[in-house]
Length: 334
Image (cartoon, rainbow, N blue to C red; front, side, top):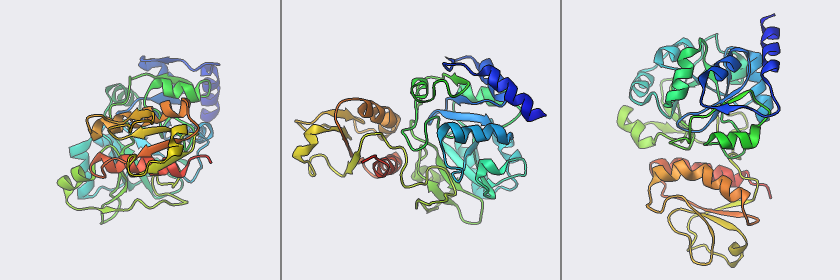
């Protein structure tokens, strides 16, 4: 009876065009009614639903066309709320949460019975994080349930970092887009598995490996792709533009005359005779991470029949940027 009521309320919230705005109340109303709301975080915009309501979570998979074997991250307002959706914490989890929450860090921990199977794809663990965005933190604190929220884009495509990006792809398909401005980190959270005796990084992201190891010492890194991933963002093909994308080490050293027919995504400089976008003229990896998805979208919607992306230095946030570029290239449409 409760699910039917939520579904009826959700239907009443739907419109031909999805409303967009900075006001919290429409988001609160939509989420309490079992609807979907795009929310801003410091990493990317998320597509949120009540994590405790399976019918609402199912709609995330439907709208994104996301495979059901790919688990979702649960967003909460503070560490106490995270501990209510998990059953145990290691010393590493305590230390990382104390140091980096709110922030671009997802911890994988044993899940509580409150979290439905649809959220974790049947896994015994759940990914949970406290986002560092004041608007969404306030939203979470006004709700009495956590939010399941993958990126607010069709599955496998470039992640959204502005409310307009969400509108461009999901307009009319969700109930509200909460506009919190451009995302300041620009790539997804780093995922760290703290569910067992060994701490393992499963996905590189907005928190660097170096920062994690300065806090808890050396950790394992397992970024291998899987047909049944233990965390989001582990599939080989992901974050892909619609145009074919080739990843190269150097635009200068590997340059080809054919590239004049395409567009390039350069690290610091675009070689003469080519056209495209630059991630960071100053060589700032934080700027490059922040601009990555926005520039990929701009190139994908512009001239040229294909794209060439240049790797950035493979250190700090550069590791996460290169990871996204490799997966985007693997997912390119021929």
